[in-house]
Image (cartoon, rainbow, N blue to C red; front, top):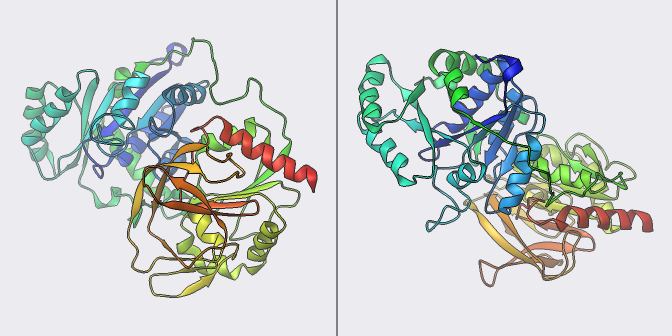
Length: 463
């Protein structure tokens, strides 16, 4: 292991052949072992994901940052990466889906490969070997040769049944000319908990400390983390900073913005909250589950996504908070809500057994989980009118990922025209409240964070 006196900033990407191969387990385990060795590890996640980063944060003790070359300009991705690495030593970037999967099939935009090349980082490929042996070499050779500009530094196998299985796989990797860096065995107690939209966020408290302990112990035993560290590429931060997203100087707080953060609502991009603070917001966290009213003195509210359907009874029983949000919307307090937040602002949430739970009733629709199906994908939207984030006609890229569907009509104006789905209107707006299924990264457009802060500050000053 290298001495602390000669450490340099380094980085690497943990990618997979496809979704479900164990990228999050492997990446989280490597992060945890590096942290145990005393390194300052900065975790990252490729793509518009809120859940996998919660596992990174649990072992690293700091937020994992999202890197997405479709949602964000390339220069913005580089800026956010470099900014996060200022006082860190190791960047570990977990990929999304398969290494080459992105926005579309024609090019690499939005893929893990695109991010790896943009940041000049080597790739370690996670392969599910549970139902293969010699064929693993052929699979890896295809990934190695598909894009000669990707540096495939090595492979980690998942689902190894035992030593004999491992010995059947090794020769094929040698023939493919790819380094085996270790493996994880078939162990049910190392499987991360899942449900309808993927892994369960760690904020819900369902992943035990013992799980992370088992994972670290296994990674230390069967994955060569020291060798992985040697394969990581140096990161050069010597270039002068020129910010695309942040103000030249951090601005003093001019308005408080309440952000709902609890077990039901926890889907936020950390960089979005940093941008709000940089442009003059004081972030005040509160709980729609446990608090009885909105924080006093705030000039705006941000309700992100999450799983309100799992906490519908508790949210409904907190009638004082529901009334507080409804009154705030009626008096014009700026409220911006995404996905789960949209569900909360409706009249009710209907569960899969047709039971209805009253919500804040800012908009007259019901969100239902009954007979629902998954809606997901990148979206390009245009504002149909001036709103707290954008002016009429401005467009922005976003993402939606939900199982619920809306029932009933809203009397509010639609928020967006979905440009890549002609004829579709999306989201709702009434007074200064805006709700949408579309998740936005506030780094997707430099004006988003500053516009919301300014809008909230102006409303607060006028009341």
